[in-house]
Length: 432
Image 1 (cartoon, rainbow, N blue to C red):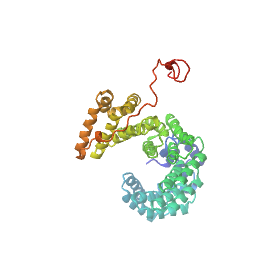
Image 2 (cartoon, rainbow, N blue to C red; image 1 turned 135 degrees about the vertical axis):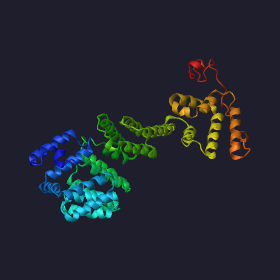
Image 3 (cartoon, one colour; image 1 turned 45 degrees about the vertical axis):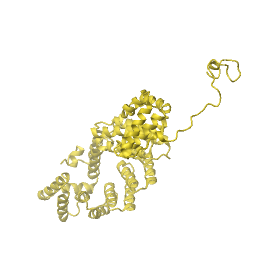
Image 4 (cartoon, rainbow, N blue to C red; image 1 turned 120 degrees about the vertical axis):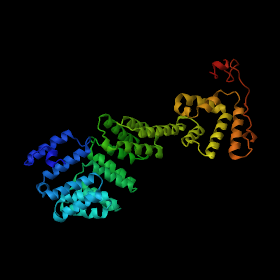
C-alpha cells in the first residue's frame, strides 16, 4: 500500500509548501475529469497531510505497534477481496484500543456499508461528522448511509450540506441528482442538474453530469438545451475525456432506453454517435445498440410518410411473431397489403431504397408482392393459413367489397382541348 507521502511524491519530513507543490504536480498528471479515482486519492492525501491534526493521526497509524498495523493492513486487504465482515471485525478491534483514529473509523464505516449494516455505519458516520463537521467526504458518507436506510429527506439534506462545503465536487452533484430521480422527484432532479452545470460552468468536463442532465430532461424542456448536453458529451469524448471508470457504457444504455420509452426520436442520432464513439465496446453492447437502432428506424417510419400498417408489421417482427395470435396479425397485414397494392407497392419500393435493413426483415414477401401478377392467389394462401390457425372457414373474400370509385366527369385525353377553355391541348395546359 502506497503511503500518502508516496502518493504526493514527498518525504515524510516535507513541510506544508512541499506537500502543496507535490499535490499540484500530481494533479497535472492525473486531472479529475480523466482520472477521477486517482484524483480522489490525491485529494484525500493532500487534505490529510495539509491538516496538522489529520497528519498527526496518520503518522500515529504509521507509528502503531507492528501487531496493530498488521491488523490494519489485513483489514484493508480483506475489504479489497470483498471479505467485508472480516474487515469490519478487524477495524472494530483496532478502534477498541485506538478509538480516536478517524481514518480507521472511516474505513470501518465503508466496510459496514459494504456488509449491508447501514444502521451501524450511520452511527460511525455521525460520530465522524461530529468530530470533523466540515469534512465533505464524511458528510457524503453520512448522506449515503441515510439513503441506504430509506431516510430520503435526511440524505438529501446531507448531500446539500456537502455541496455547501465544496460546490465543485461533481461526484456529489451526480449523487444528489441520482437520489432525487430515484425517489421520483424528477422536477427537483432536473433543477439540480441545471444548478450543477451553472455552478461548475462551461468548462466542466465531467461527462456523466451532462448525461444526468439529459436523462432528467423531458419533451417539455427546451430542445436546444437538451441537444446542447448531447453535443457537449460528443465533444468531450472526441477530446479523449471519456474513461472506462466513468461507466459511460451503462449511462448510454440508460439514454437509449429513455429515448425508446419517451419516443424522443429527435435525440437518437446524437446518442447513436456517442455510442459508436465510445472506446472498448463489447459485443453485448454493440448488439444492444443495433437492436435500439432498429427500434428507432421503425418508430420513424410514420414520421417519414409510411403507413401505420407497415409500422405495426415491423413492430411485430421485433416480437418475432411467436404466438398464433401474432402470426394471425402478420397474415392479416399481408392480406391487406396484397388487396391494396396500388397503395402499398410504391411504399414498398421506397422502403427497399431508403430502409434496406427493414426491407430485408420480410424480403421474400415484399419481393413477391411487388412482382406478382396474381395477388388474389397470394391472398387465398393467407386465407388458408388463417383458417389453420383459428380453425374457421372464414375468408376475407366473403366480406362485402367496397363500391368502386367512379369518375365524376368524363376522362380528358392528353391531346384533347383543355376543359379550362384556354384553347391549348390538355397536356400543355392543366395536364402539364
